[in-house]
Image (cartoon, rainbow, N blue to C red; front, side, top):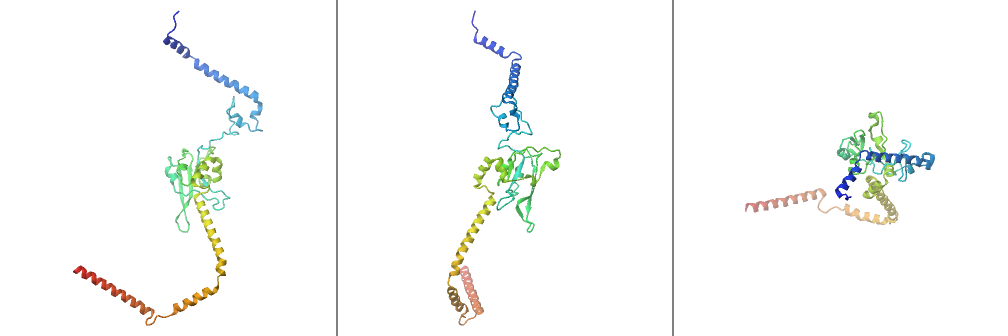
Length: 297
């Protein structure tokens, strides 16, 4: 019996692999194995796996889980990654902030509205009611979440870290007008909320800014410390000034009084001013005559 050539062996092997129904049988076997594993895992762990008395969600969604791993939504929710992007929100200062309680980080510069691809952001800049001049904070801010594509451009381009991408994806509603167009009140969330949902990114932004605070808050804090140091130094100098002898001021006033009141001999203030004015006029005419002589010569 002769041996098979390499080409004949390859053809026979491919024929066995390409038999009709082989792939279907493998898929059915995989499904059957998962089906059996689900019952085996339930028998091994018992009803404790689905008990609400203990937190078994991490176990059922872990890498060692087998069988049925269905999330019982909405009672159970899978944790979203830190860089998950959904509808943007505006950052405001916390209520317990010592300087800028509830103040907006947004300066209404309008960069987010300009870079927004679907143009779903509208901003109304605030004005001072007394002067009418613009102030660096928005009077109104709107985002249409049905148009928003959650690209994150607004958060990337904001120079003040005032707008961020939220993790709240449960925004379904039957009323689009009142629920799907978010105004400034609905968009505003404290800075501590951003640090809670994205601690790593908040820390990276803090390293770039150099402080956890908003830029304006940091400036106000520096101004406050500078003014406080100035007031403390002035208060420290007040006792020394009060301890100085009053005779120095009295002698200075006495020396300055004769000099101020002593009249100039032979002239009065108005005649002296006229004389100086006449002298300047005479010198100007002499200079003009000299220039005319040079140009004529």
